[in-house]
Image (cartoon, rainbow, N blue to C red; front, side):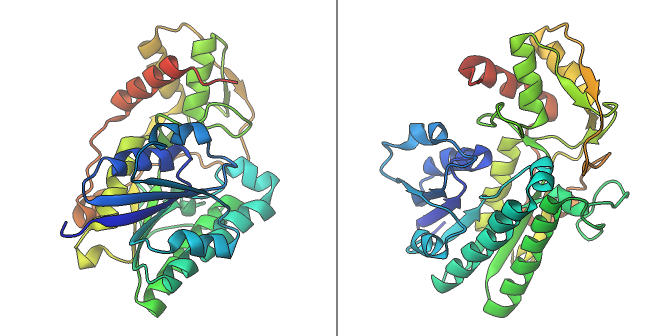
Length: 323
């Protein structure tokens, strides 16, 4: 890369965002990493390792405030937009806030980027966009109707990115994440994801609850693969890769029961899970076709699921960040 870049990461105190911060601060071609986060779902603890790094800057602020977004964008060259209010169940319980953060907040970030002449924005899209589509594996050009408010917001982000790219000569790349897991993913709270909940249960020797029959399957993706995808998307010189969306996953599915069994094997646990009612808004099966990302972004899913599970389990075991 010819010139050093200044990178804004929205949601940088969150799970994926903080892994991105850690990665890019180590790169010679990045002269500054600025984080914008309101710490509502992100955690200051995730940023603590970077506080003494001269290339790191933190702005505590909310993407729902346009001026905050404008201030955060000033002087930046590229944006990795990760800030969002995740969780399908949370969006069903509180669709208004999910809409305000994920749609209005994202529109603020996109508009501020335009005003600050930032051309390239990579944003976190979601596999929830596939909605009620039954086809497997999921291909980017075949989606169904959203089945949760969260999915509606993520689809809307893609529509705004497409329109902004066309109207304002900007470059957007959307990354449809599939069930990302790894270090810094919070195991606490009502909307914690399944892998940290399983690990937490094993480490506390308490049987976890699987909602549904446990035969629902997901394409679980270790966070380092997502970091790689963001890097490729932020700095690709392939013009055909621009203003597109990509599945970011492994390209393999595993049931929740098999997932728990894999963690039991890693940990030596003998626990048996409990089962509860299936959750509203959950899809039964999810599996990504990642050929488009491989072809256009040169993405490679380097860390397989079982290797990622080992890394994640040992991170939780060492940190024990449980409430």
